[in-house]
Image 1 (spheres, one colour):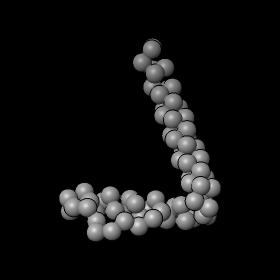
Image 2: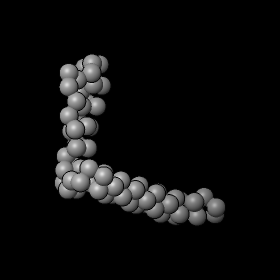
Image 3: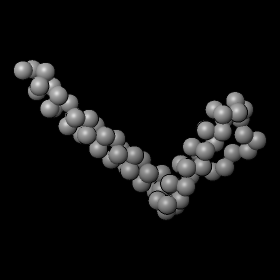
Image 4: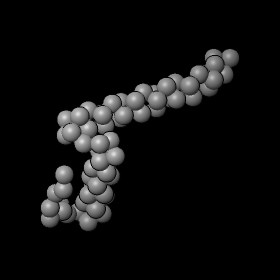
Length: 69
């Protein structure tokens, strides 16, 4: 019976964790926008560009020639 209860409650805990992480990400984006005095869309673009750099570094094993902020 305990296994049934664990299965019922485990997905809810995962959802709460994911919601918390989403809220933390949104708060971090707002902080970045405030610190750099930019729009949230620009923060999203900054994160996307940084992600693309990370992917290229992992694929090529090399650092990029230049960094963009």
